[in-house]
Image (cartoon, rainbow, N blue to C red; front, top):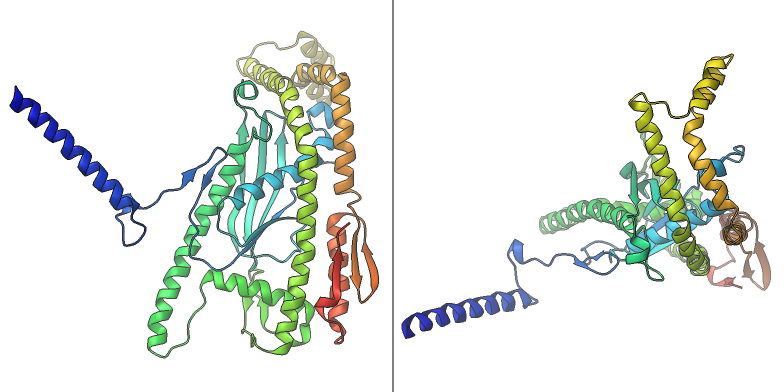
Length: 436
């Protein structure tokens, strides 16, 4: 009996020591590790985080999403599309994606941009296909500064589970967080591929250097140089217009790399930093918009969710009944039979899809608090889509004001900065952004 107890204790002790040893080995911060010991992505309450990859500094821009609104469609609300909300979502969704990309911990900076005209290494562009408070569907792609497509246009979506708002919601917690995380994860997967190419190229360059041969650029280095050359070409086309060209696939190709120590190149980089400062100003404005509108938007999601879900179920029931040959609406069938034309029959037969949803929408739109929220979103979205806050620039003692929509403002800024660059006596430090 004592022998068995002793053996059991010995096995336990050995198991404990082995486990402790394994944990201790894993905890050692230096030296090679087995594949199973490599540190895996850790998870937070809102999504995974990652160790930084060995890559060059990269700037990432999330362009404000296209709200996909048809100004000539006067029945958008009947279809469950509220322009006021959709405009708000086009900024808010881009900002949420920016947050998820930022948590990847891979980029020098991540900004929300008014257009793809800003200078960056990677651009994520998207458009909202569907948004009902229950379902969010976004079509997006990822492109780099060369014009090379990292991720072709794809559709990502998420449906909020029944009871999510009651069980999981707390202020700031996003019902569509899985969607933002999915997009970020796709970006990371592609970045890993380019990071491996970068590491392989750096290793090959060591061998090339030892043999007296010129080093090669990795694809990520091509991207960063292209970003700089495109802006240098914009500022000084006579000097740098031939340093980069467009190939037959409509992508930028580097012809040669200018001397990075030359006075003119250093001047272009100084103006490029000022250009980035102006672009970052818009990112801060979008962050302010998000902070201001998000509490009301989350309230909106919670209140509209039951209506949106019922609309979806009504439409699904209709489709199922039609598929099995059932009569959905007798009145619609009679109207179709009496119709004088094929167009009239089609209109009558498709009426069934809209009836349930139309009644639900009407009951929702009649609510006072709903109308109050719509008014708030309308006011906020107009200020960011139609008349963005003016941007004031102080240039050698004079004030230049950029007005209009954000994208139009940035386009005007580019005209101003290009003209300033052409005057040799103007230096970038004489331009001061006044953020009011």
